[in-house]
Length: 95
Image 1: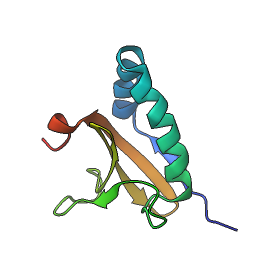
Image 2: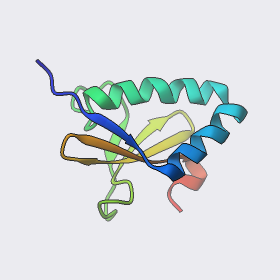
Image 3: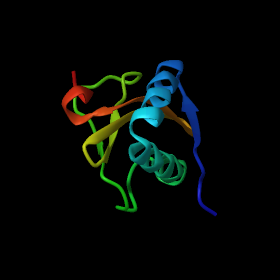
Image 4: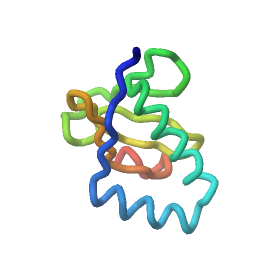
């Protein structure tokens, strides 16, 4: 049986997603699919998602990123939890 990870949503992420849902419904739909993917494989070992571990980013600031078209989902993996930090357009994600 595969290990399942629990997804934790930070309050700041929740606010971003609320705005995203209203302005970009397609991106919101892809985010929901991405959350399901992260529950199963947050490290991208199966190669189904474009996941990278970011260099020189400390834990707690979104060490991993998942590419969703022109958007980037930043998150951390802590034990058996995936902590979602931000969902932003590519040009704003790394600032």
